[in-house]
Image (cartoon, rainbow, N blue to C red; front, side):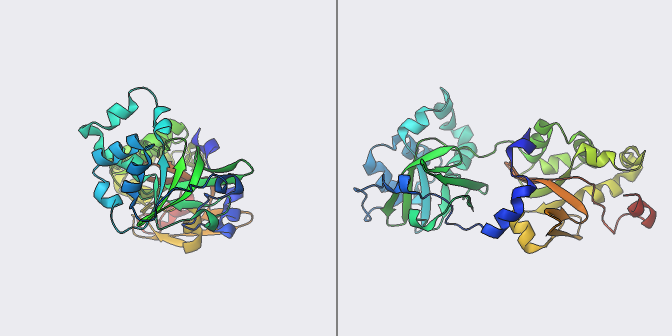
Length: 324
């Protein structure tokens, strides 16, 4: 389940204290020991990769995605470059499929997930930090005695200097989340009431769209806390406007990760009212609802799981707000 695979709130306050910077976790003595001695700082990222001779698949993918001019631009960029051997680890037929014109958007998403804006050198980093990729989703890093890793890929060579940035070599292709918010919620198996409500409100297609959105998602258990008959009432066609208002009160425009949400302290929802986000009592809360899991990636946004349904002030009567 996705709640088991992501950052729980027990580590959220520690993450906030550490901070998240673009210089996110590629260093370590093990990695520095393998630093390239042959890289030239007189070529851009694309030409450097071509000259290396070990990134033929990556270069072909960059060309197919139409990203050559972008990666030859001013930048600077930090590229985590999978070798040909890294691409060869993918299931048979994957590369050929990605290179097809009809899969250009998917290929672009994967490639831009390997790029961080700015020039991040190995000496700038520490363990446990994150950085936003050009694709939008964040990258998590670890540094240990065995070296450094980005997501599930080991960083095998660092600090290959280019005129418009720097290349770090990785041994595995890293893949962004490919399921939408709706698909991710379906796969979790714990948001059936939320999905039914989104369908009844006509919002499922919106949350399945481009976004990005940040959803504070009540679990089925959260909906079960409501007074008997409340969910059934909200799902009736005559209560659609109220249901829409409630659901939009759980959604923020953009991809807002837990650290940034806590740092901001508040966010305007799609419903129009703002929600407060704060750390207290050893956890984190949105309004009075506890956040029980954070930063669940989706292709079009991010999900934070909450233990109670939120209710806006506008769009519900006093008695209805008391019921929640």
